[in-house]
Image 1 (cartoon, helix red, strand yellow):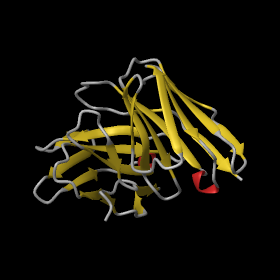
Image 2: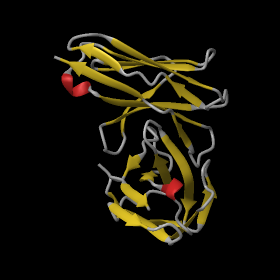
Image 3: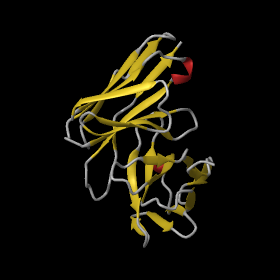
Image 4: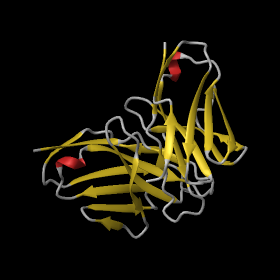
Amino acid sequence: RKEVEQDPGPFNVPEGATVAFNCTYSNSASQSFFWYRQDCRKEPKLLMSVYSSGNEDGRFTAQLNRASQYISLLIRDSKLSDSATYLCVVKGSNNAGKSTFGDGTTLTVKP
Amino acid sequence: DAGITQSPRHKVTETGTPVTLRCHQTENHRYMYWYRQDPGHGLRLIHYSYGVKDTDKGEVSDGYSVSRSKTEDFLLTLESATSSQTSVYFCASREAGALDEKLFFGSGTQLSVL
């Protein structure tokens, strides 16, 4: 079983739609959680950290459920520019910070 | 964004030859990482460094070695390249103690082993 699992998609949605991605992790000792965005053939970039209480950044909402060991990302009012691959990332408590990446969920937003 | 550069950006080599990829960061970040990414897959950690001369293995370290003689430079060496090492290689760095624990990535190196 992979340490971090994501539904690969692809998710094809019309502009303005709401779309949600889920991610599960296997290591219950994991301490930090993130969503990264990766455009085609580019380097990943941090989209947002995920906090226990849930957090929002504009149209993006991230939630963490430690009991069920899953993380979610909700995108409201999808834009064409949201088309990308979204990577779920989990980091252990070790300060050296080995981060484990999911395989990514591909989103395509269509006009 | 952090100043992190990788070289070369593209490389084609032959099976059995040694290859060295370079990562250079100007942010004085303590932690540095090498990942590989294959089609349809996320990033897999090859090796990482938590300080000068301090390195450790990641999940896919076989066939790779690293060195970090200066804070700013982290080298990845393929001792004898194989076709299975054809991949995109990303270097990343992170500041120690940063609240957001953000990873900064280089632009990647596309390596083809023929």
